[in-house]
Length: 157
Image (cartoon, rainbow, N blue to C red):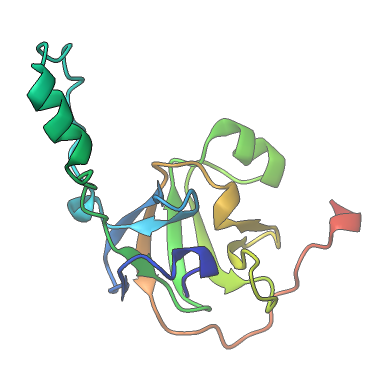
């Protein structure tokens, strides 16, 4: 659903037909988010005006304002997705095209380990952590897979 590292971040379940993007959250972990929930890029601030001594003291004691965090969008195992904008290096590595249908899966039951992944039709599985930020994902169906799909082992790659 959502990797362990995203448990401190607000989250919600995906909706069928929804467009998502691979996003690096404040925890440093990759996950899925809605582009509508992501903050707009902020322009680079020009050099701040010189503060007086008392303004500097006041700003030292003010709490740091954290930007609002976009909720992580959780996908159930077995959901059907379309991955878009797959970078050329990942296309070569996993023998896929720039747009592929995938099945969302979990590759491990171990605690404190990344387990969210996608399985391509050729059997390769890729953890969400190994995806690139900005890759687009369309949720086709949240229903689970009923047929068995063999997994490509490391020895066969």
